[in-house]
Image (cartoon, rainbow, N blue to C red; front, top):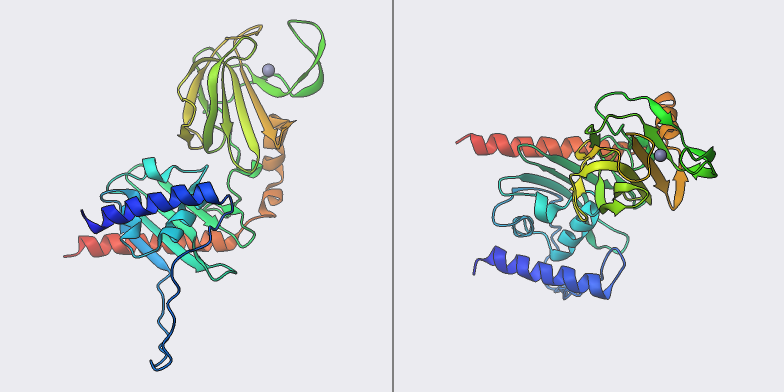
Length: 311
Ligand SMILES: [Zn+2]
């Protein structure tokens, strides 16, 4: 049994048990503490904090091969949870680089992670505030990083409104979404990266999809002709998730897009306009450490690639 296979099995065991026994972010390490012998001369060993590698047998075994502990791997998976499914999406041949750091309890954890293969790139950084930042220094999946659900521009046929007269029932009913006049079959794009919570049919919403974006933000897409994702799928911003349609209770073909923050419906179109107008709002919580670390890790991986290519 290769060492790495054994280690990854061990690591998975640790991950499972730790997620059962503890809901906290850092599980307490049960590793034996090495007691220092007084007679030995004290040497300060510099511990490497930046690691690079290539996915071979499996992602976890390849990360363990760099010499980090299962605890550190656990913190790496915590960092990417809800944003990128490393266990499935980090495929053979993909390259990764990550940076470890020490927390207040003197436990090592993965501060930043970068992954790339021929068609994908992913980066995440954990700030001292415990928030997760992307390569541009923005909080992951925060509302400042929304995009339009289409490649082209479509007219808004009905806006977000808390006192709209419903076109079918003629009653005053809040309209929690923004309706775009899209012809049937228009590709619908995810407005931010996330995990598919719901993809099913409903009498009123027709075929609809709900995506969880982390930080308590959900997006919902209704009246679809056809969904192209299923529950549990991870999507990147701009991924085609469906074709727009005219299913459920509608008066004509359109896409209804909804945004929900911590359980409260918010105006998607207005949110988009506000951010385009005042980008400084988004800059408030920008982390330049996250941006700098992105370039460091990416640079280190490129160095590794050059070293591999040079005999
Ligand atoms: Zn609507």
